[in-house]
Image 1 (cartoon, rainbow, N blue to C red):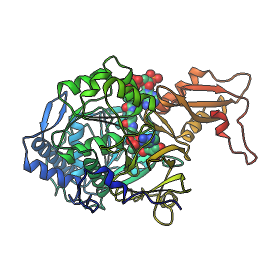
Image 2: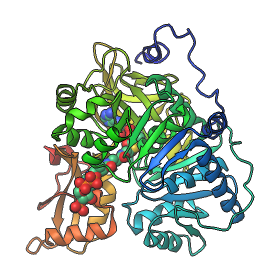
Image 3: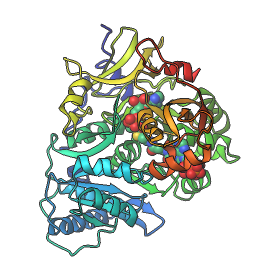
Image 4: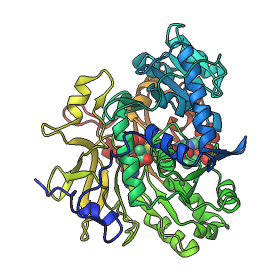
Length: 506
Ligand code: MCA
Ligand code: AMP
């Protein structure tokens, strides 16, 4: 068994001279309780900016989110009910989210690129009572999947006002988010993140990244995944800092926002940093105090280019939906490209195989299980309660973690996850396809790209590539659609009949 990296390395994340004990990450009670105190302490302080309506202060967010909670309560929702939330970033979306979280609803964030079958799977599993969506078609998909019994509203939650329910009373064990993710295998499962998980991770990041009230984040990540939500938004609110909300990532818009709003922070996925590094304006990134990359490996070439062109040494960290954030390069001290750094405060980490093996994690940031799926939950943890990430790691000479690869079949393209089996099953539904295998192949732009190997039902008349892609596009989010399609006579299989994916990747 390998050494556990934990109680020593967290010190590397805190300023020199910090006390001897690990910080109490749950001291604030919950994120909503912490935000409430910050709002009361300085209600006029600017908190969030969006093109529409401009700046909103802590106090305004506090009032507006309480109003949303009153409306949702009047509509019949109560603590513990699930509410599906699927919308592009906007002030209304954030207010709706905060209102739901403050009254104890369990928020189910859903990617806006999802098509009907993806939405229907989540609705069928999570059984939400309401959906907050910015697209009527997505609302009708959700309602249909719920058998007609679903309250659908827009991000402005334009429902009749009511008295707010008790707010900000959630305890650390109460569920806050239900995030659908493929985990290591199979169909998307709902990872239940409790209020304590959200707080522990945001507090560890606040300490490790020296997140202060004067900081201002340019937040161009979508808020329906943990990177934008659990890192960008939660961290901003817990630190009492501010953020500029952008509805989508675009190099010029990010750099304009950083300049116009005197931002200090930017968080992104490697595809975003590659685009920034290639821009003639790359040097402008140098004005920020801290840039953080995650969700997929940051190529050392991109790190070096930004260090050269902008004097910006991007800090890479490692996270996962089930655990929020785990490991980070230190703020002070060396940021080592090609590594993700050292376990964050509160996080215990070890490698299953000794010096190299599956990354195993424990800590107050780690979720407790998959929604209504005890079998998947049991599989996800080892008998000592270590969460099996499905990522393969090793330690470098400085004790920094390197993510070497994945034991799970997951493809990560532009920071979005694609589970091959979902795409394989879909392609297999096309009448012209006998079977298909899907793998990730290297891509400079996306990190990995979805690549399909298709065995036609009639080798003499394979389905057209465009037809196949249109078939996929109608049924799956655009980022899951194969970018490369190869037609093959047969798939390479081993003696047990299992497709040998490494041969396809070669
Ligand atoms: C868009 N497209 C993609 C992707 N995004 N294809 C593959 N992979 C993608 N990620 C497609 C579009 O559908 C379109 O296809 C074509 O690419 C061009 O779109 P473009 O305008 O260039 O895309 P974009 O809007 O600029 O989006 C690129 C992006 C975006 C900004 C990098 O993918 C993004 O926001 N990624 C971040 C995802 C994220 O937040 N992940 C965190 C997960 P067509 O033209 O054919 O229709 S949380 C997580 O992983 C853990 C917790 C962690 O550690 O953070
Ligand atoms: P998700 O399932 O969306 O939560 O994605 C989590 C996965 O993203 C992890 O299990 C890793 O495989 C990957 N990941 C996140 N951050 C990094 C990173 N900095 N380097 C390599 N892989 C990463």
